[in-house]
Image (cartoon, rainbow, N blue to C red; front, side):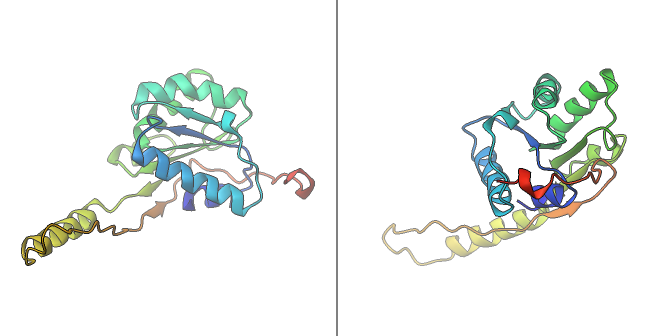
Length: 179
């Protein structure tokens, strides 16, 4: 949701998404964030701007052209590896990331900083997630047996945005185009 809000704040209204596998829990959560941000800004959700891949670089390459043909001004890749494939596609088609089109990712994998231009992405705090998971596990192991009524615990660890050169401010669409 935060990344899409940022893209909207930079003037983008036609934000394409390169998602992972369609029935994946991470794909679902990230797409709900995308849809929430669009809804908050009164931008209609367009299913033609969402393409499903397999989290890998080659699926980013394969699907990038679809989003360009749909008129996306920004592409939000739900993982940085797929963004690498988008960069490859754009390089081959003389489309300049950060100038002609904006690209954002998710995960802040080490490779994101080495893309040219550097990829704007969301950083997942994996060490904090691991620490919290271990603490919960230890707490559960030390609990008295309550007859099997173990409740499911969900703890959210916030992501943080890493802004690099892959996102460009564009002139926002006039309010009359917002629905």
